Length: 110
Image 1 (cartoon, rainbow, N blue to C red):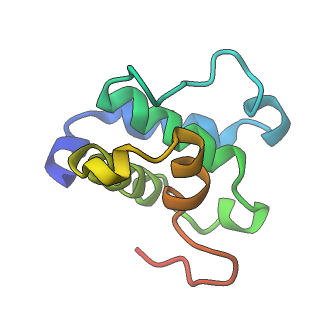
Image 2 (cartoon, helix red, strand yellow; image 1 turned 180 degrees about the horizontal axis):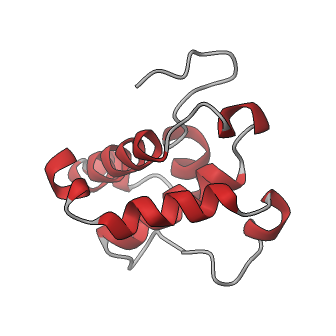
């Protein structure tokens, strides 16, 4: 996974730009990538990143790296696409229950 991701620096730039944007401007922005049914893998990863960043706690902004977010989203999307039972879950459920890199007080570890 990491070899593929490092070959595509635009993805790192996407994460960095999303982290820099004010939270209120991201969630309902029509330019925010949309994933799910009919999207390709890159669109799903971009939508996953946008969702995570839009809902990221302020404390994570200083500690969670763009590379960590990108790796997390790429692996989550790849698993969703590889497993029929995972692909059957609604996209919104995937974003809220599968894609997040940590739950509540879990350590943010790479």
